[in-house]
Image (cartoon, rainbow, N blue to C red):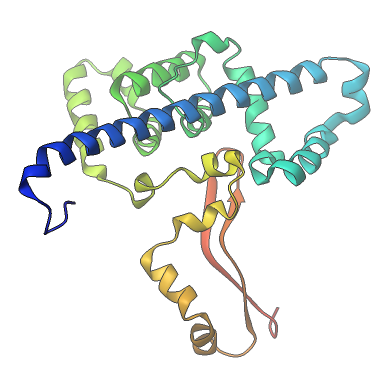
Length: 248
């Protein structure tokens, strides 16, 4: 958005500079994404190779990932907790050839691709996501609606493709598409990465936290914001977490 008092004679120059900055930011993000993907793949490879060491695997068993996570997360942050290490291990097993990875995709894309059991389907979704520049939301939608499977089964591929394209267009923009992926922020070790995702309502509540707690009733305490809860395939961020000391 240009300032109201901007000199009209500067508008062509401002437009060129703005485009340069946007392009540079996109390239920087892509570079960080690529490094993150490579690092996660290498971590997964090292873990798998260690597990295949025979006696070492038997010595640690199921405690290997929690043991590694305790040390790594303490030094590098929760981006390397046991859940994420488990994803990295699965990432290497699902994509054992690093050169076959698509540089256009982020770590969150690959986390989403791990939900696909079929190797052929997983490969197709990876290539299509890169070729069509799908966001992670778009990729999740295509996988969830079995887009690849429906294409194979349909006698009218054009109709299936048109329906899928219209559904993706209807997704619109998610607020989280305007900020960096929390998974990437955790990987970079940025402090309080999750708090960068708050909305205006959440920020307003934080600003008036004391009054808000009194409105909730007796015994409420503020625990934290953007608390992550992880499953095997997905991360969820709870905006605000409270605890009631009376009812526990």
